[in-house]
Image 1 (cartoon, rainbow, N blue to C red):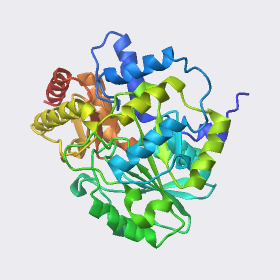
Image 2: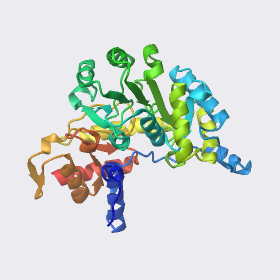
Image 3: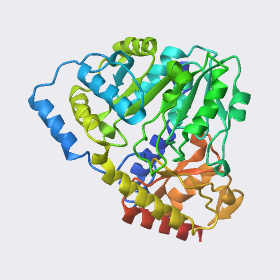
Image 4: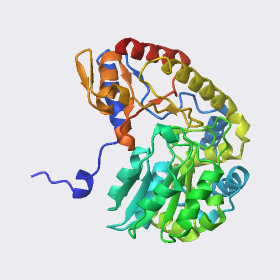
Length: 394
């Protein structure tokens, strides 16, 4: 009898990865699929970072690194936090991991106990809920909608808190919505959390540099929240280094120490070559990646313009990241080309089968009226994709 653990049986498959796999499968069958499902920049890693990696290979960096990362990398991360986020951390507060996803999993594993509750302002990145479940906690969604620009209010936060609340995830710029919380909005939410000292905050800032002028404020920069906030970041999105797998946290030292202990038994130190290249990436002025941000900004405007001409797509203006998250509830209950659309998953599947466009259902992000479309694809592909969607819905 094949008996897997309850732990793995209770874990959902990542919706974004599942859609990407389905799109790949159809491509292999010869279908011309345009994938707008993955959160991955379509740029190559900048040359100056690749050169640093080559240098590290030639310098014979090939041994295990310290579990929490090379000291000089952790020093570079501290400088980056000070320069970009006005946050003061020392190297003992930094843990470098195999991607920001591992950083988040570490934090959840060291802070959560069975019966704890995790607060998830929705929409939220798919893995927050799964990682919470894996840590034997339950999660509570705090809903928002396109009408509130996908932001929750302090009143909603207060109403969601119970004696079991232990952790809350903030993600700004947000995946999937592209929404950015302002300093004022974060301070209003912090006022609520000040009354509940047992709740810790994970501030996921992986998209901070992909930002179209709104600026990015770090939750840990609120004095009363510094000792209760774990700031998560990495190089995947802004530096087009998704496959290099480097993420990191800045945290209260006791939490960093616990993450280091856990990681020592799970993966140990992250890839040594990627760590050396990350020093070069973080030490460089942010303007060096400005060309990618400018291109994303341009694509966002194209996508909003073209989708805005299709009846039934309700849009907000995302201020960061590289996603649009249209409300498509207009189509629910309708039958299009013999396909009954009951929900966002049906709509997403309809686009895949009828238009050969891969998107991700909003249900996976706690926003059942929406779908996520990534514009980390070429302008030509984006124009073609939206043209196909228009024709399929005509």
